[in-house]
Length: 571
Image 1: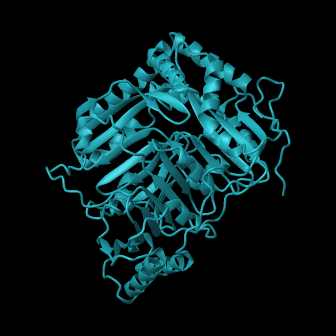
Image 2: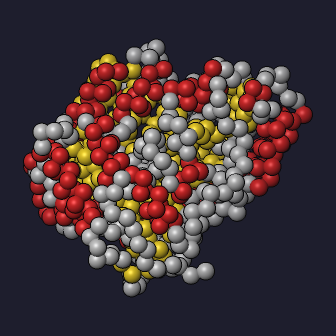
Image 3: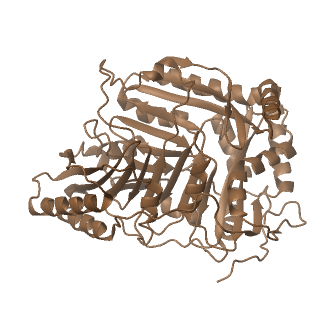
């Protein structure tokens, strides 16, 4: 099958939201149709009434003797699961993690790539390195809230997982009940049992076909995990069951044994420099002309007196068709090379498109009662020389327009933290964050929760931030609903993990959705405030998407760039 390059007609930008369906079908229409599979997962922990059941009655982590290599670790896990089958616990619900330390350090992406023949769900999350300018309050984040600073576990560099011990998916917006349903399976005593996933940017909007498998939110506790440490690795397996959710211990053991049978103990080398592909077709939704109209309308509302809107973030979905199929893990590996100061992630339900990203922005990190967050806004390219880079950075720091956008984001996050937390600290209040291709204005915030159960309130308050939505939130979100006619899905939503003692979420920006064919959807956004120039913001979208575009365009190739003459046509 060859990549499609036909021209599709579109809808007008200013049509009502009901017109989104056609645009979504157009985005899906090529050699790699987004087809909703009939995926069979284990147990949906967010089934009706699950949050009322209370914590599972059994939660354990069992450590086996260290192995010298992954092959030995796989054998130990298979034997341990066979022993579980022979001696079932009496508990009607529970979760057990069995882990094997490995003396040699392995690569989590390469381990995950070795499992590529499987149709099992998979996930990957790599936390960024700690920032040097973290506020003093967050430095003591190892405190458990009771004055103890003893660290009981080593933080992984990266975690890769396959299979589903328990998953959490719903079609309604992520709620306190859903959060409680997830926390049932998590414990401070088992800190490495974590649920990885993402939440839609706007769960009240209809999901397009390419995002259907994610629901309004999707999280998974993997059946098998590979944790890459600074010195060494850990291979672990997790089994979860709950009779009240019609998933018995025996069903869980049988499913886990089936998954372990598919696990490859080897790693597969991944090309980290190039994807060996070329772009043959490119569509932007919206087109440049439609973008200018939307930005002009936003500025009219911001300057007017009929609404309180002061900022709105508009996004673009760029559909790339390449001459070869893109492997999500190869793309992730290439992104990771230049992502020392960013979060890398890959979330992929069974037989679904993969959501891959390289986000520089933290939504929040919780460790016991300690919270850290950040404000990130304003964008410039990096300079070609040190002197050029310094000058561009100074222009960013002194820009009135960029300072307005950044101050809105920083002050909004601070205000929201103050509503839920004590001891809110902002330091530095404004600094440059330099990434390989771009630089931003940033501020670090730290605070202290009054109660660990307030974690949901933190998530609910901080998402969506003015950095990806606007201010006031509801006015900005409504403008996006009215004027964006593609589905953001998980783009710009929270992506990360929940744990018993700790949780961490990035903002799902600098991201893409990859199907199993030739099509890749790349997302980027730009903040619109008074003083915005539509053309400058369009260039900013190109800059933010460049890390994907440059990887996809391995060699010179004629790109069929489609932009119809009708200025209201999308694709």
